[in-house]
Image 1 (tube, rainbow, N blue to C red):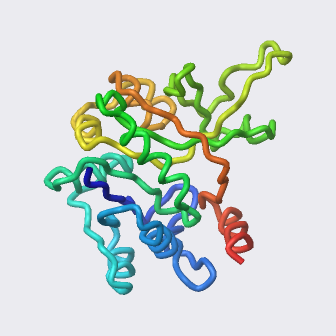
Image 2: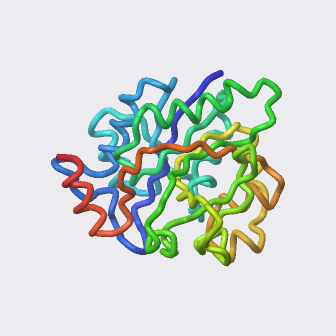
Amino acid sequence: MKIIAMIPARYSASRFPGKLMQDLNGKPVITRTYEATVNTNLFDDVLVVTDSQIIYDEIKHIDGNVMMSKKEHQCGSDRIAEAVEDLDVDIVVNVQGDEPFTEVDSLKKLINVFKNDPNKEIDLASLMVHIKDKEEIKNPNTVKVVLDKNNLALYFSRSPIPYPRDENVNVKYYKHKGVYAFRKQALLDFYHFPMLTLEASEKLEQLRYLEYGKKIKMVETNVQGVEIDTPEDLERAKKLWK
Protein backbone atom coordinates (compact mmCIF):
# COMPACT_ATOMS: atom_id res chain seq x y z
CA MET A 1 0.00 0.00 0.00
CA LYS A 2 1.13 3.52 -0.73
CA ILE A 3 0.54 5.58 2.41
CA ILE A 4 0.84 9.35 2.62
CA ALA A 5 0.20 11.94 5.33
CA MET A 6 -1.68 15.13 4.56
CA ILE A 7 -1.83 18.14 6.87
CA PRO A 8 -4.72 20.52 6.07
CA ALA A 9 -3.72 23.98 7.24
CA ARG A 10 -6.16 26.90 7.28
CA TYR A 11 -4.81 30.24 8.40
CA SER A 12 -8.10 31.54 9.80
CA ALA A 13 -9.66 29.86 12.80
CA SER A 14 -12.70 31.17 14.65
CA ARG A 15 -11.34 30.67 18.17
CA PHE A 16 -7.67 31.44 17.50
CA PRO A 17 -6.95 33.16 14.16
CA GLY A 18 -3.47 32.51 12.77
CA LYS A 19 -2.78 29.82 15.36
CA LEU A 20 -0.73 27.65 12.99
CA MET A 21 1.83 30.44 12.60
CA GLN A 22 2.12 31.10 16.34
CA ASP A 23 5.56 30.48 17.81
CA LEU A 24 6.04 27.17 19.60
CA ASN A 25 9.48 27.38 21.22
CA GLY A 26 11.29 28.74 18.19
CA LYS A 27 9.21 27.48 15.26
CA PRO A 28 5.61 27.98 14.06
CA VAL A 29 3.03 25.39 15.16
CA ILE A 30 2.54 24.15 11.57
CA THR A 31 6.29 23.62 11.16
CA ARG A 32 6.45 21.62 14.39
CA THR A 33 3.56 19.47 13.18
CA TYR A 34 5.08 18.92 9.73
CA GLU A 35 8.48 17.94 11.14
CA ALA A 36 6.97 15.62 13.74
CA THR A 37 4.98 13.85 11.01
CA VAL A 38 8.00 13.47 8.71
CA ASN A 39 10.12 12.19 11.61
CA THR A 40 7.77 9.25 12.19
CA ASN A 41 9.22 7.66 9.00
CA LEU A 42 5.86 5.98 8.38
CA PHE A 43 4.91 7.67 5.13
CA ASP A 44 5.88 7.60 1.48
CA ASP A 45 5.20 11.34 1.45
CA VAL A 46 4.05 14.14 3.79
CA LEU A 47 2.20 17.11 2.29
CA VAL A 48 0.75 20.32 3.75
CA VAL A 49 -2.40 21.56 1.98
CA THR A 50 -3.23 25.19 2.74
CA ASP A 51 -5.34 28.19 1.71
CA SER A 52 -2.70 30.59 3.05
CA GLN A 53 0.25 32.10 1.24
CA ILE A 54 1.88 32.69 4.64
CA ILE A 55 1.74 28.99 5.56
CA TYR A 56 2.74 27.99 2.02
CA ASP A 57 5.85 30.19 2.21
CA GLU A 58 6.77 28.85 5.66
CA ILE A 59 6.73 25.21 4.56
CA LYS A 60 8.62 26.08 1.36
CA HIS A 61 11.19 27.88 3.53
CA ILE A 62 12.03 24.61 5.31
CA ASP A 63 12.05 22.71 1.98
CA GLY A 64 8.84 20.92 2.88
CA ASN A 65 6.13 19.60 0.53
CA VAL A 66 3.17 21.98 0.30
CA MET A 67 0.38 22.83 -2.10
CA MET A 68 -2.26 25.54 -2.25
CA SER A 69 -5.93 24.59 -2.12
CA LYS A 70 -7.71 25.42 -5.35
CA LYS A 71 -10.79 26.72 -3.55
CA GLU A 72 -12.39 27.34 -0.19
CA HIS A 73 -13.43 24.31 1.84
CA GLN A 74 -15.62 23.87 4.88
CA CYS A 75 -13.48 21.17 6.51
CA GLY A 76 -10.15 19.37 6.37
CA SER A 77 -11.54 16.28 4.63
CA ASP A 78 -12.69 18.40 1.69
CA ARG A 79 -9.33 20.13 1.49
CA ILE A 80 -7.29 16.92 1.35
CA ALA A 81 -9.80 15.14 -0.91
CA GLU A 82 -9.23 17.81 -3.53
CA ALA A 83 -5.47 17.35 -3.11
CA VAL A 84 -5.42 13.54 -3.45
CA GLU A 85 -8.00 13.15 -6.23
CA ASP A 86 -5.31 12.76 -8.91
CA LEU A 87 -2.65 11.09 -6.74
CA ASP A 88 -1.75 7.39 -6.91
CA VAL A 89 -2.26 6.49 -3.26
CA ASP A 90 -4.09 3.85 -1.20
CA ILE A 91 -4.24 5.25 2.33
CA VAL A 92 -4.29 8.91 3.32
CA VAL A 93 -3.56 9.87 6.93
CA ASN A 94 -4.95 13.27 7.91
CA VAL A 95 -2.82 14.91 10.59
CA GLN A 96 -4.29 18.13 12.00
CA GLY A 97 -2.04 21.16 11.62
CA ASP A 98 -2.53 22.08 15.29
CA GLU A 99 -1.27 18.69 16.55
CA PRO A 100 2.49 19.24 17.02
CA PHE A 101 2.71 16.27 19.40
CA THR A 102 1.71 13.70 16.79
CA GLU A 103 3.82 10.62 17.47
CA VAL A 104 4.76 7.28 15.94
CA ASP A 105 2.85 4.69 17.97
CA SER A 106 -0.59 6.24 17.46
CA LEU A 107 -0.09 6.63 13.71
CA LYS A 108 1.21 3.06 13.45
CA LYS A 109 -1.99 1.81 15.08
CA LEU A 110 -4.10 3.64 12.49
CA ILE A 111 -2.10 2.28 9.57
CA ASN A 112 -2.30 -1.25 10.99
CA VAL A 113 -6.11 -1.10 10.83
CA PHE A 114 -5.84 -1.25 7.04
CA LYS A 115 -2.98 -3.75 6.98
CA ASN A 116 -5.21 -6.08 9.03
CA ASP A 117 -8.29 -5.53 6.84
CA PRO A 118 -7.75 -7.70 3.74
CA ASN A 119 -11.42 -7.52 2.73
CA LYS A 120 -11.34 -3.72 2.81
CA GLU A 121 -14.35 -3.46 5.12
CA ILE A 122 -13.06 -0.43 7.05
CA ASP A 123 -13.42 2.93 5.31
CA LEU A 124 -11.49 5.03 7.78
CA ALA A 125 -9.82 4.84 11.18
CA SER A 126 -9.36 7.46 13.87
CA LEU A 127 -7.94 7.93 17.36
CA MET A 128 -9.64 8.26 20.74
CA VAL A 129 -8.48 8.84 24.32
CA HIS A 130 -10.18 7.60 27.49
CA ILE A 131 -11.26 10.61 29.58
CA LYS A 132 -12.47 10.74 33.19
CA ASP A 133 -12.63 14.43 34.08
CA LYS A 134 -16.30 15.45 34.35
CA GLU A 135 -15.69 18.99 33.12
CA GLU A 136 -13.92 17.68 30.03
CA ILE A 137 -16.77 15.25 29.37
CA LYS A 138 -19.25 18.15 29.53
CA ASN A 139 -17.11 20.53 27.47
CA PRO A 140 -18.63 21.01 23.96
CA ASN A 141 -15.13 21.61 22.57
CA THR A 142 -14.29 18.02 23.54
CA VAL A 143 -15.82 15.72 20.94
CA LYS A 144 -16.99 12.42 22.37
CA VAL A 145 -17.46 9.10 20.54
CA VAL A 146 -19.49 5.99 21.39
CA LEU A 147 -18.65 2.57 20.00
CA ASP A 148 -20.05 -0.83 19.21
CA LYS A 149 -18.43 -4.03 20.55
CA ASN A 150 -15.94 -4.05 17.65
CA ASN A 151 -14.79 -0.47 18.30
CA LEU A 152 -16.65 0.84 15.29
CA ALA A 153 -17.98 4.37 15.84
CA LEU A 154 -21.73 4.63 16.43
CA TYR A 155 -21.89 8.40 16.93
CA PHE A 156 -19.80 11.49 17.67
CA SER A 157 -21.11 14.42 19.69
CA ARG A 158 -20.17 17.59 21.51
CA SER A 159 -22.63 16.49 24.20
CA PRO A 160 -21.76 13.92 26.88
CA ILE A 161 -22.57 10.56 25.30
CA PRO A 162 -23.85 8.25 26.59
CA TYR A 163 -25.99 10.33 28.94
CA PRO A 164 -25.30 9.04 32.51
CA ARG A 165 -28.90 8.43 33.59
CA ASP A 166 -27.68 5.59 35.82
CA GLU A 167 -24.35 6.65 37.28
CA ASN A 168 -23.78 3.18 38.72
CA VAL A 169 -23.16 1.81 35.22
CA ASN A 170 -19.44 1.64 34.51
CA VAL A 171 -19.40 3.64 31.28
CA LYS A 172 -16.16 4.77 29.66
CA TYR A 173 -16.05 8.13 27.93
CA TYR A 174 -13.80 8.63 24.95
CA LYS A 175 -12.52 11.85 23.46
CA HIS A 176 -12.13 11.85 19.69
CA LYS A 177 -8.76 13.07 18.45
CA GLY A 178 -8.84 14.62 14.99
CA VAL A 179 -6.31 12.28 13.39
CA TYR A 180 -7.76 10.12 10.61
CA ALA A 181 -6.62 7.49 8.15
CA PHE A 182 -8.79 7.03 5.04
CA ARG A 183 -9.05 4.74 2.13
CA LYS A 184 -8.77 7.09 -0.83
CA GLN A 185 -12.23 6.15 -2.12
CA ALA A 186 -13.91 6.97 1.20
CA LEU A 187 -12.30 10.39 1.12
CA LEU A 188 -13.45 11.06 -2.44
CA ASP A 189 -16.98 9.87 -1.59
CA PHE A 190 -17.07 12.33 1.29
CA TYR A 191 -15.96 15.12 -1.02
CA HIS A 192 -18.84 14.49 -3.44
CA PHE A 193 -21.58 13.76 -0.86
CA PRO A 194 -23.65 16.76 0.32
CA MET A 195 -23.73 17.64 4.01
CA LEU A 196 -26.68 16.16 5.92
CA THR A 197 -28.44 17.28 9.09
CA LEU A 198 -26.33 15.61 11.80
CA GLU A 199 -23.10 17.12 10.50
CA ALA A 200 -24.79 20.49 10.05
CA SER A 201 -26.13 20.41 13.60
CA GLU A 202 -22.99 19.35 15.47
CA LYS A 203 -20.49 20.88 13.03
CA LEU A 204 -18.54 17.60 13.00
CA GLU A 205 -17.38 16.37 9.60
CA GLN A 206 -16.95 12.75 10.77
CA LEU A 207 -20.73 12.50 11.07
CA ARG A 208 -21.03 12.76 7.27
CA TYR A 209 -19.22 9.44 6.95
CA LEU A 210 -21.60 7.78 9.41
CA GLU A 211 -24.68 9.30 7.81
CA TYR A 212 -23.66 7.74 4.49
CA GLY A 213 -22.93 4.34 6.03
CA LYS A 214 -19.13 4.41 6.14
CA LYS A 215 -17.36 2.28 8.77
CA ILE A 216 -15.05 4.15 11.14
CA LYS A 217 -12.71 2.00 13.24
CA MET A 218 -11.68 3.74 16.45
CA VAL A 219 -8.25 3.08 17.93
CA GLU A 220 -7.47 3.89 21.55
CA THR A 221 -4.29 5.78 22.38
CA ASN A 222 -2.91 6.92 25.73
CA VAL A 223 -1.15 9.92 24.23
CA GLN A 224 -3.11 13.08 25.08
CA GLY A 225 -0.82 15.69 23.56
CA VAL A 226 -2.19 19.21 23.13
CA GLU A 227 -4.53 20.34 20.37
CA ILE A 228 -3.98 24.07 19.98
CA ASP A 229 -7.43 25.63 19.76
CA THR A 230 -6.93 28.61 22.07
CA PRO A 231 -4.08 30.87 23.30
CA GLU A 232 -4.24 28.95 26.59
CA ASP A 233 -3.62 25.69 24.72
CA LEU A 234 -0.55 27.26 23.12
CA GLU A 235 0.87 28.13 26.53
CA ARG A 236 0.30 24.55 27.69
CA ALA A 237 2.00 23.29 24.54
CA LYS A 238 5.06 25.46 25.19
CA LYS A 239 5.42 24.03 28.68
CA LEU A 240 4.95 20.46 27.42
CA TRP A 241 7.45 21.00 24.61
CA LYS A 242 10.15 21.90 27.14
